[in-house]
Length: 346
Image 1 (cartoon, helix red, strand yellow):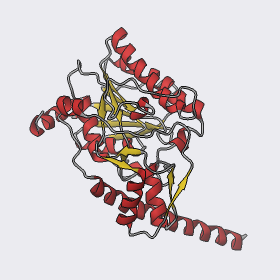
Image 2 (tube, rainbow, N blue to C red):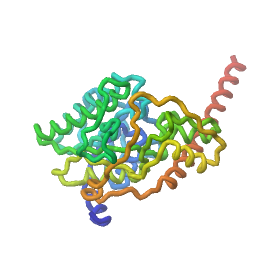
Image 3 (cartoon, rainbow, N blue to C red):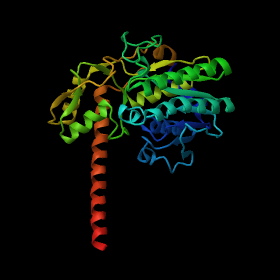
Image 4 (cartoon, one colour):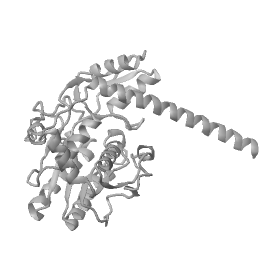
């Protein structure tokens, strides 16, 4: 698919269409909403703001083609839409392990509710799945044909198994109801609008480096991950949704460039100019030792590959976090001043 063919297809697929984005105020969801609006879509974002942030979509709320609604997708949603991107679910262990039962409900009940909506509307639906379905893999890099190695009763299972069950539901709706589905397996993604307390490795390392705190590497730091910049990821998502109905996925989307955690920490220290030292902590249970996508299917079917280098993407992300930390510091100062003023007045 050439760039000109892709642009024509995306405009045809999205321009003038009512597109639902669940998790629309989240890190990925807000970037997707922004891109869909640029393609001429009418975007309806739903979010319960558990991990989504209002500041992620603050620049969109004045757009007459953007509508944000507070909703938890574990409850049914009745709305008129032409396509659905199902992104709602906490994606960081810090957040999804806080309430693991609710995390599973979001993946399973949420998938059922969105699939039922797509069935009623007779529209296509994309599931934002995850590389976590591969667990701690015995095959490297991971192709879509690999069934994974997941601990179904471990502390990460609420997310891993929830996403695996969501994929099962999507393919059962496709087989049983002929529903046009798309399943995308997302590998580690980073970029602006990640939460300061996101809890994943890129945000943790950047915040620690910018604050001059010790950078915490778990285990020996030799476990690997592959990091995809958010703009590349969203491009892949839009391409997959725009494919013909017979293409269902699952399709891996991620950057196959692989880093050890120690290499990543050292790169972030270098890019931030930080004096932070690197310290080690015990490896969490079921933490995968290696993770890298096989993206041959994305290249062949979607004509997709990542374009933003990790160094360039991290530089943009660091600038965002630097501004966000400064903004939060100013906000904290204003709050302290307001409390002092209230105490004087009272």
